Structure formats: structure tokens, C-alpha cells
Amino acid sequence: MLAYSDRSHRVQQRLEQVTVGALYVYAFCAVVSISAMQAAYIFALLIWMTRVCLQGHNEPLCLPLLLPVGGFFLASVLATITAVAPYRSLVELRNVLEVLLFYLIVNQVTSTERATTLTKVLIAAGTGMALYGLGQSLARGADFRIYGTMSIYITFASLLMLVALMTLAQLLFRTHAWHVLWALPALLIITAALVMTHTRSAWLGFLVGCGVLVGLYNKRVLLALPLCILVVFLLAPQAVKTRALSMLDWRDITVQQRVSMWSSGVHILRDHPWTGVGMGAMAQVYQRYREPDSSIEPTRRLGHLHNNIVQVAVERGLLGLACWLWLWVAYIHQVWLIYRCLGSEPPSKALVGGSLASVVGFHVAGLFDHTFGDSEVITLVYFFMALPFVVQRARLSSHSVSYGVHA
Image 1 (tube, one colour):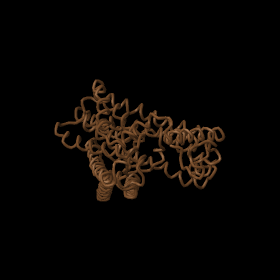
Image 2: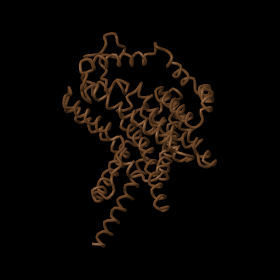
Image 3: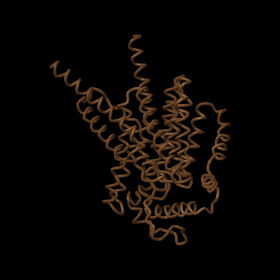
Image 4: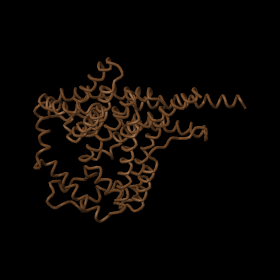
């Protein structure tokens, strides 16, 4: 019996090592390749679930935000049952399960040190991809919207925004002065690549996220943020300046198109208020609600409405939107409580503050793009979302050990 127990323990240890290894692969591939990223975290999920089954009830799972996550899943199922195109909605329903990555990280990354190492691997990969993207800009000119190895520049910009904010957190809440030697160059390279994506929504998300981080670090430093923005603007190529100034021009064609999409979304919601039209139905439904004077081509097939809130409401109705908003409000509330409990712990503050800033940046960018529907982006958001709860578990574990030793 003892031999069996030892063998089972060794198997679980080996499974844990394999899971952690897969998570490192995920962290590296998150900004490099969607196929490799998905393969890595799905493999990690399967190994982790196998380990959970072997453990039985010996180690209870940590499931933060379970009620809003469960509510959103049930709302998505209900939207699928009543969908305009049920089969398409059922296919898209699988994307809701990407939140399992959040619970994988919370339960498998057991220390602040491991979480910090994972983020550094991600930052290193992000810096490499940013350099690759800048190479595209040098080869094709300042007007070219770089996309790295992603399928489109919007996805690349969103990933760079998230990684840049976590890099800034590592820079501000550094434990040693020499951290500046790697964090600052990485931040400058990633930010430069973000600028050259010409993606205004990601720029806004990054700026607001920077404001959150700087405010957490030192509110007085916020006064320097407008100066930094001005310097970047003055140093940017003329094509970038023109793109940035277009945000203030309501006659800009892309601004008009987005307003038209949102107006159509409101009309769709009026006809399908509670459970929406289902996921994956927008290309089929939009033409019936397209405004006659819209600047969007009549033959253009729209898969989304360039706004997370409008898209979730149209797809899942007001019930789904309420659960979706509940998830993010609950996250921000809990993370703020975690941050307030931190003392002088720079590594923990970097993870928690970086997580909060990244999620805020994600939602600001999502006011103008459907970032929630981008698998590469939302999985990285779930990864960052989990970090504060990793910190919380690690602190509780260390306090329990300390109390046990003291007793």
C-alpha cells in the first residue's frame, strides 16, 4: 500500500512538471503562434485535469469568480438554444471554455516566483515579436501596419498592448535597480512596435492602462504621463501622427462606420433583447439591420460590430451582457482588495498591478474593437487575470506555513 502511494505521488509530481513545462511553452507562444499557443494550453489543461482526477479530494480546487463565469456560460448556452443559427452558435460556444486557462493558472502556478518567471518569458517573446514587427515596418515603410506573425494587425496590437503594460509593471515595481537594464529596453521596443501597428484602440488601451499603473505606483508621477505622450507623438513618423489625430475627427470614415455598426447593433438588440441572436450569426443578420446611409459597403460581411459590449449584448442578449459585466466588476473588486492587502512586496505588486492595468486596457480597446472575440487576445487576458489570485494563494499558503511553524 505504501509503495502504491509513493508511486502515485511520483506520477502526480511528474504530471505537475509536465503541466508547468506546457505553461512555459504557452507563455512563449502566446504572442508568436495561435496554433502553438492553443496546443500548449490545451495539453496543459488535459494533464492538469488528469492530475486532479488522480488526487481526488486531497487538494481542493481554487475557483475564484465561479458564479459570474458560470452565469455567463449558462447565458451563452441559452443564447445558443434560441439562436438564429443554432449550429453556428454551438460551434462558437466552445470559445467560452477558454476561461479554463484562468483556472489552470490559478491552481497550477503555485508561487509568485513561478508567475513572475512566466511573465518574463512572455515579455521576452513579446520583445522578439516586436523586433520582428519593426523589421516589417523598416522593410515596407512607416505607412505599413505591422502584424508580426499574427493574422491581422489588430490582434498583434492588442497582444503588444497587454505585454507592454505587464512590462511597465515589472519596471515600476522592480525589486532591483538592474531590472531597468532589461525591462526598459523591452518596454521601449514593444511600445515602438505598438505605435507602428497604427491601431488607435490599442493605443488608447495602453494609455489608460499606463494611467492605472502609474496611479498605483505614485499618483504624483501621473503628471509626467502627458509629457511622455507628447514626446512619443513628436518622435513618431508623420503617418502615425496623422492616424492619431484622426481620432479627433468625427468625419473619419472608420469612426462613421463604427457608429453605424453600433446603431445597427442597438436595433438588433431591440428585436432580440433577452437572449440575443446567438454567436456566429452576425454575418447573416447584419444585412437586415444595415442603415441605408451607412458608409459600410452593402456587400461587406461583418462578423462583429467593433465593440465588446455591443457584440456581447447582440449575441447573448441583456442576460448575457449582465453576466459578462458581472464577471469584470467582480474581478476588479477582488483584485483591488488583493492589492490593498499587499505590503512592501514589489514582485506581487507587479503581478497584481500589471493584471489590473492589462484588463482595463483590454476593455478600453474593446470599446472600439471586438477584442473579446479574439482567441489570442482573450486567452492572454485570462492568463493575466489569474495572476492576482496566484499571489493571493501564495500569500495565504506562506502565512499558514508560518503560523504552523510558530505554533
